[in-house]
Image (tube, rainbow, N blue to C red; front, side, top):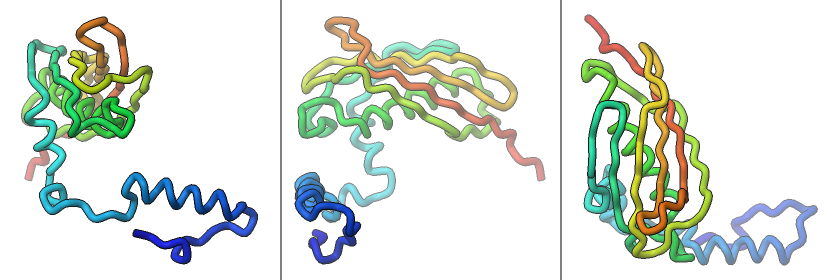
Length: 169
């Protein structure tokens, strides 16, 4: 853990505010070591692999679902924002792959997410990915997260992929 003496605090900041920020960081585990199993390459993928289920795949569209489990929940009991981003990325890649030729590499150039509401623990979430536009060089994907029970839109994401032809040597 970082100590207060290790932190450089601006002279125009009130000391009690600096202390409260330091306490907050300690409470959420900033500067803590990760467990060995999470320090491995692609460890977060292992968390998602067991949670995310593909329900329907068609050209330009994909539907997946998952249940919010404690392992991907934040301290308030809702789906963690990082999990939203990771799921949005995975679904976007899968959706893009339904229209982009396999001989083209794709890479994520931009991912924007709007957090509209929260999906609480044990909530079942439907994730719909769809192609907005796909051209020779760019593919745009929209991803919507809705609560299965109510249909409420809780998160929405937009991903921009750049399509790269395979290098010819």
